[in-house]
Image (tube, rainbow, N blue to C red; front, top):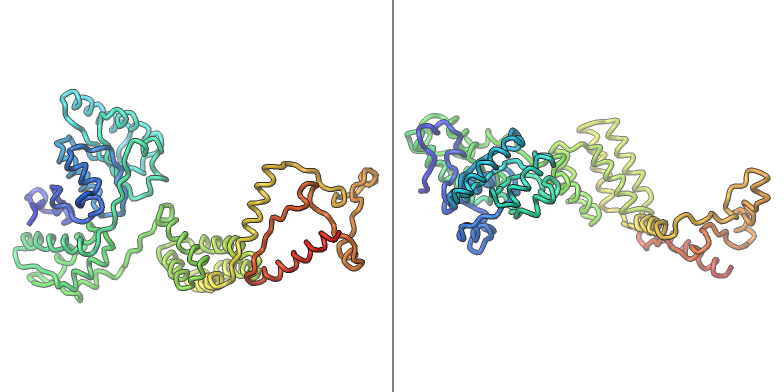
Length: 436
């Protein structure tokens, strides 16, 4: 049994806090960095810590790992939260760190929620970290690429922590039961099925698992020996889905939604759309992304897809939630199973690339507007033949591109859906053009 936080001064603290490991050997999970050959284990065994930013979800062990590593090298440990700390706090700790260095003592600054610091606040850390005055151990639930300034990233190692597996959580829950039994003064245990249910519900968050276990144990009839699934289920009514409208999980899930539609997987499309909606995403945001998808990934392979997506948005605006969400689901399935083409998207990219290279080429005279006599005298509109009349007379095709671009073919349709028809029509035009 590992040593536990159980002193009288801490007896009222949450279970997750009291059960926090105090040594490297007590850590649970994160085998990819803590197991044999893992990068953080190498730092620990060498007794040399670089500045690191721990990136992972809630309750995966970021704070605990920082405390254990600081203790392992005998460093002074200064924990701060970026939610409440400011530049003044950083300067005070940096000053103390310089004094420690003169005394050959190391200093670790643990900055929780480091992504909450703005650019100017993060800049204050650059000097002390660069000089090795202090070791920065940052923790964030947000992607550091978006939330931490590049100079600070270049001075630190980003360590990715994964959600704890159910087996890891079961280890912690067993330890928690043992500690709760000491507190309760009577036998306390958990039915294996109940503990497995709790571990699955926690979704990799040890803090959530342990604190919920404590809630259950303290709210069941006094003297109950075994926690059963029936006693546990009332506490699991509100299932939490990981989501942050402005964070990485937002972008991950919308990416999964778009790529599921692109792959033609209607089941995955419904799953990701449903998951976003259930997590509180703005339905109109999803609708906007579907409208874009209809042009970018379907285009003229199924021209009605764009109207379908627009109609779904309008239907949602009329009906609201939850009825309007069915319109979004209907449109999403249609977009998923529709024939795909990115030909229009690629054509637009080719046009933009051409514009950068050739600039403002003059508009051909035959397609210029000629509303005045002067313009007509300058040959504006000269040579223009209405395509309807020209087709009937079998005359030459009207040239509309500037000189030098006559042989450019920006739009290159494929053979999916209606684009097969478009492809044949454009091929006929090319052949007429060659004949003159």
